[in-house]
Length: 325
Image (cartoon, rainbow, N blue to C red; front, side, top):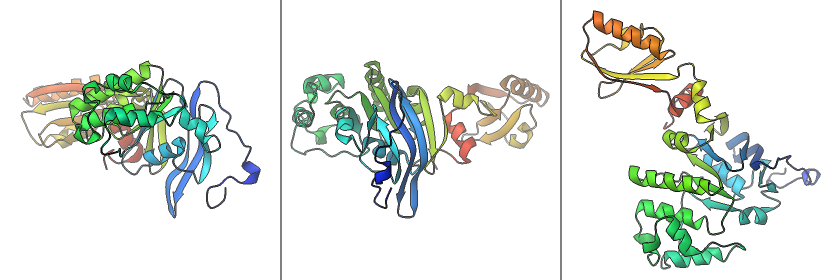
């Protein structure tokens, strides 16, 4: 490719080899902005009917790779296909079959929700009835309202409804629940599951590990423009050398150094509320050692909880930093 990211004549007829069950194929994508590389050699596929997540902190390259797949940006090098259509060469065919929810969306200030959906629907050959869309997202009573009068959760639901005006087979959601309160986030998760149950392929970006674990069949973890791991959430957690976390409160403070001597403990943290967090490679062995030590030293333990570690721990292990850093 040349400096403007245009195809070289010799590469104009190169095709990505895809299979029928692939909704999205990304091959060796690089995106540079001057001297800064936002996406660095990313490759992956998304299967039809899958909820696929891209998890990572702000600045990891999540939005950039999504916009390249959608056709909103051109890659510096590399190629992407959606439903076997080349994102650049067959841009109009791609746009007819996808729905896109961006991180920031602006709408006509004085048009009602129903008017906006009718307007957007006219841009496509295939359209969905606007009232049916509003009913699906629980906004029927707001049909004659403007976007500015909606709450944060209602606005996010409407933005996704607007992405469905063409009844797309593939839906892109870029951090769909950022800034929402817990109840609104739960409601939106339910709607995403409903979209998936209708047979749609969904690819979403998020920096909420709980969101990725609850919704996604597979997750690609991105950091500094690269994919550092890709698998199901469960398999990513199982692959950790310390797959368990044990939390408890103790009647005695200052135990962190001593707890490192307990069998199978790989790390100890104490949160601001004084709760101990043990990272363990063998939860049963750690509990036995913990109870034995507490009995000998007459330490009372309470609020004991054993859980598998999560995607936050996967990210920390792979990159050496917290997901929110």
